[in-house]
Image (tube, rainbow, N blue to C red; front, side, top):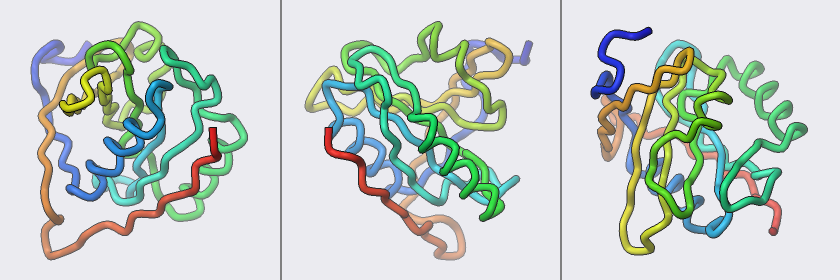
Length: 163
């Protein structure tokens, strides 16, 4: 178990453009859960490339990456020397907190797991967690206009198939 389980531990630093893109994707796919990731240079812990993905379940209560799309994206990250820095999805009628299913499927111990709740149309509930071996640790989210040294990540937006 991690020290500090159940308390704020760590920080997800994310740029405003990527934050807004995640929220927009969650709102666009509502009432179904949206899902995707933000890739970054391996070992950097810096979200840099926004990649919305298809919820293969097309469900209001569950998400699963489309397996062919996931394979393609993970190979692309390998080719670019990237890793999933943020793995995100939305909850459409509950708070932004990992469900038991979310916890059981969390397989990237180095990733920030972001949840966005779309239950309230005029409010944004955006939370980040580390999930390792079943332990859920909420972390602070720091939104920056741009990263240090003026580096703003390139946002690659893949067309999402029409639902």
